[in-house]
Length: 403
Image 1 (cartoon, helix red, strand yellow):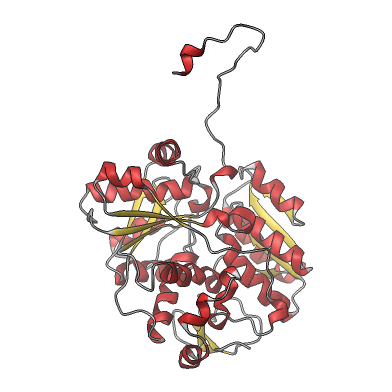
Image 2 (cartoon, helix red, strand yellow):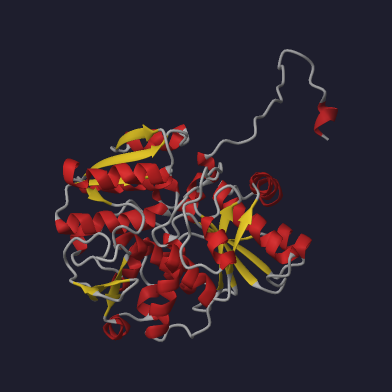
């Protein structure tokens, strides 16, 4: 069963019927799933939850899938919290924690949102899904949809890393490179809904990817003993995870598992594509299209976000902020953390670390803060610095060089 009672327009509050497919609301805004939270609180306890081992599906009372047979799983795990002790010592920081979402199926946090979206598609009997992607979301949708027996058509910018495109294709997705950015790909998906007959699973254009990403907040709260951190740095493109976590915290408070205190939510973007930062700094609720967007941290190269106002509302309500970081700083931080901590961040995750350092230096957060940085994907999917050293085994080895 599910405790979902209805869906609600995130902008107008208009109610929508549950149990049937939905896209955006009539106002053109994302729909949010609402639950009978009093019933959820009676149906599950922290103690029962602690005995479960099914990754993010362990939070099923908080999720909209009605029938257990529709829950698509590829072996999800609870993603670990990793301390950065060398960085803590160097910066004099109390606690720097990386939540490493790269441990999920398909190697990124996109597994959460797409597992839920695909499971709901199966529940509704939808047989063809389409989406735009910068790489990881498409890989997750292809994998979960193939497992569910659902056809997928996926469009990505033509400079999407080959590993992502090949992963999508090998896992059953019908993938096309497009000479444009993710918003251009999204227009193709939107225009094709009637002509091609697919269902649009673009970020926030259906209600259920938020519910999957929400599990990051549920999981983090449980891992920290139901006490939220002081600050969360989140790599922000479409912002589904930031919105989802904020929703999760509200639901946990409603059932009495946490109090009203919230982390500062920090939206991290690249200087080459920072529409949320621009809107935050100008006091706007909506972010205009960012022209000529570019960053090698592809997951945050989103020139326009349909849920911009939800991101900005959460950031402001939390007392947080939005920050842009330079391209060179992202990759310098990635390389330094790998060599210093043995933790291989993806570029988007490295952006959160350099944003943390920048914010600490600027006095926007304190050294005593318990900070969580979201590493949204495995660093193994991205190009790394070349290695030039060789050794000729047929010649005498000078062992002094290894000292």
